[in-house]
Length: 636
Ligand code: MSP
Image (cartoon, rainbow, N blue to C red; front, side, top):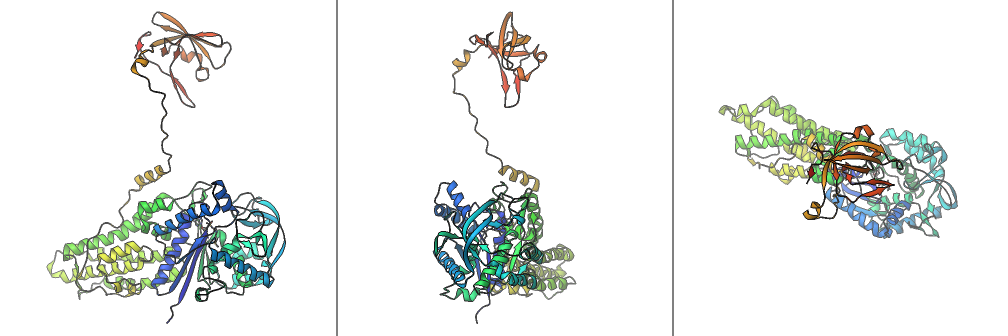
């Protein structure tokens, strides 16, 4: 029997800079969903990739002095490395510069053209290059791009148009009367701000640059990036040729995961293109929220990005995946701070899960020589634990089907906390003191082991490593690791051996760690530059003396200079010094300063200067070097 299919996609990312934790967020969510669906027995197709055409990419490559493809190959391989580090289980990675994609996009263009849904005209309007988006005057926010807040350019060029307006009514119906766009709260914006304002036909070709897929019938035009990019979801399945039947098998997609700012493209332009192609629209588009830093959305141009590689190297992939999926409600925005991250790791992973596992393993070794023993005993606390053990899987599945990853994990953690509570309720350390209660103790340790096995199976799509470590430690056979076995109680066999393991998630000292993370952002200290080396003999040539400042006058010709009268032992000296802006005259009188006494006399703006006095100064401040010693005393 053919398995039911499940097709899930991430947006294809712009390789205009390194990806940050925000991009990682979407991809991790898609990965978790793909893993759960596979575990549930679906034939999953999980697609991700990169969106490589357009003016923005061209400009980035130009700035680096590279051919676009050379630049792209480099950064795309970094993106793939990141996904490898994050253990993203994608089935296919599409690049919009792949030959098969370019060819298919041209075929899509021609299908639409031949149908009469693409026509040639002239475009006049406002264009935001970084967002590759067209705007009307009324859509601007304070005259700027409503998405990124940057300037838009007036553009006038010959262009091909897609008859978006023709699909207005069908789009309205799709958005208002089906579950196509999730969460529901995003529907209003699309309907009121875009569709009901009246949809204009969409300019889908550009002539002002050439980094794109050529319009097959018109050399000077390249296809607008969004038509190129959105088509990836079907070209990756070999549409329109479909030689291997992939398109037939997986399309329509079960869900496109996208960030909220690109919901518009996915729920208006994309379904309209598919309608024009007479193809089914995706079953669901989910618009998730943004991870924000203090100053707003993360972006390289704002300089506020969080590097996922630093985080996974320090805390581990599982911990970061857990944090992303648990901390933020998928549909809403959420704030990232180091403190939020560290507290979450401590409370849920180190305390709740880590302690449960380490306490249980320690007790099985201490009281039962590392062996789980099945017992006939039943305690009054067992049933509520077992009910939760059996019931949690379905609750998790329901949450995941609604893309509510945070509450899916919360369902599992309710069970983790319940299991911890079971230890307190049954107090195995007390049972262990009484030989007659051996059966009762075995029962407690069995229930703990079986609950932990179920927890480990349930977390496997979210924290694959941790799951495997725990299941290995508890000697779980393959059949006891399956997703479905996570709702079957009592599978662990009598006499199963339990291995000791290292601490799963060490507790983090939050204050210390925040200081450490803060220091990562600091610039490395600049190396001090010293003057050329001199020998001790060179230095010995200097005659430094303590000198008393007796009187001070302004230099008659230069505001910056003061003329100081000094007493050096029995001698008098006159020194011109450039310190006028730092001192009032009366502050200087009586100071005991250091004089370079054997400096060759010079005239400074006509006034004789017999030596110089020493001072320390930085950009802002200047202080005289003073020595509280008899005037005339030599310094060496
Ligand atoms: N190339 C287009 C997508 C084309 S899909 C046919 C694009 N690329 S992007 O690299 O700019 O963004 C990709 C995704 O990353 C978007 O869904 C965006 O919302 C998401 N994120 C970027 N920064 C983010 C956060 N700070 N938080 C959460 N998601 C964020 O748009």
